[in-house]
Length: 116
Image 1: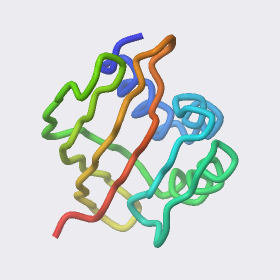
Image 2: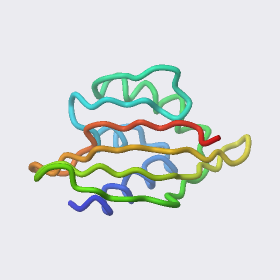
Image 3: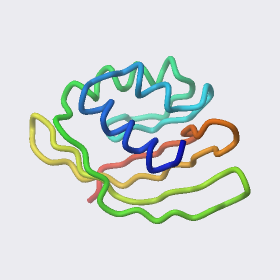
């Protein structure tokens, strides 16, 4: 699977509020600092808990800007912005995602913060 395909699946799963589909896109011991989170979490169990709270308020999400940069043979870092349409309005956030390309493409690290 390509990074582009993973992002499409992530977007679709967020909009459909399919928490299991979202968490499957993350590596077993992935790290997530979610857009609305105060702290980072590690592992699919805690990532699942975050998205159980965040996904229900999301109506739509669009990746706006991204800059892919290969770090090492099996890792790609992407830094950019995305916009969430929520029940309370639009929310623009910055993100930094590290993808592991070894075997099946997975999110290894995902940091998201409200864009000021």
